Length: 540
Image (cartoon, rainbow, N blue to C red; front, side, top):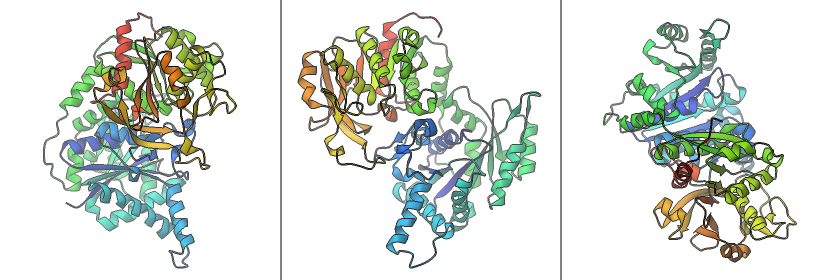
């Protein structure tokens, strides 16, 4: 079968839901029996998001092979339930770095290097890697940013060229756009969509399908207007009101006939009927009334919740598994240092401390770990959340008052968290951490082993610092259990506290492998412990 390409572009504004829509469409196609692969094209000049501030980029999503990628790849993996690799995300920075490296080697035989054809050729080469590596029948490509951005132009030009090279019958352009509402009149406007389509057409691309997004109902008249002014068939304008539940998006697209429309336009026949019953059951479960479990998430970047996208979704998955609602209250760790926000923490059924870098707000995270330990509050620590749990234990249980991580205090006399040995000679910051999938052996009889119900697991990592083994025996004597270790026993992967309902932390990032239908065991354990705690509290 000839590989088919589905190109997603965005119009009017960013954060329009293009990534979620692409992921949901991938699910619909997979349900019909097609092998689907996904790729995100990011227009920023950074080589990858690994060195970017979460305030600017949101979460850095890590894949099995250690690629640091855009958070939309999390949507792809969660919705479609596939495991992606580094070919599924590339940036302008990578494209230019490769092109310049080739020029320096003399690969272009003295030619003048230009955006067309050299940059666009490199973009097309990277797109081709997805089909070669995965053997996918349908490749979904999402172009980051918004049509009209100067940064996106080389990507769009490359897609225009690719359409002519692989055949128009094998390509489909889906434009996801926003319909704003005028507050004074309550009127939904289509003009911005018309302008974004005009911008696309000016570079030689006419969308085949328009997915019109809005917070309100979109009537047929508006769809007719979009079809007329944007030169798109009426049945190819799909109105998509903002969903109440994120995982309802595939169901809405299916109900609107999006899956069959795509197949018809690509000339494909499904090998089986789609079965969305598990997703319907999932969404019904989410929407039904249930008791609420309250989780205080103690973070450094809580002003932008996208920085903890996978953590948030993993908590929701665990809530579904435990038949409860999850209510996340975002607490800035720096506020705890100023004696603010403690009313929220004390009202919570559980505490979660996620990852992060840098010293800002770390003492607040340590205080949160102390509160959870002393008050028997269920606690889950992720990466830095494990490290602060160790620092707190060293200070307040072992009596090492100056204990710290050498990341935050290089002169600490008790570096219970220290730089990994193989990290000490590294000078470049980008892509040099311990990244990707590594095995972990679970110790029998521990909460971690009970949660996983397996002797060993593989989890995704993103860190430079680790537990200092010089302190392992001292920790053990006072009730710290090292319940997950690397196969050689050298690296501490999971810790948990003896005589505590659930105080568990991991050096890896379990949130990256949680799925709606397969919630992660450590998150399930946290929510279960919080539910069993049965604390009765009022509304936040």
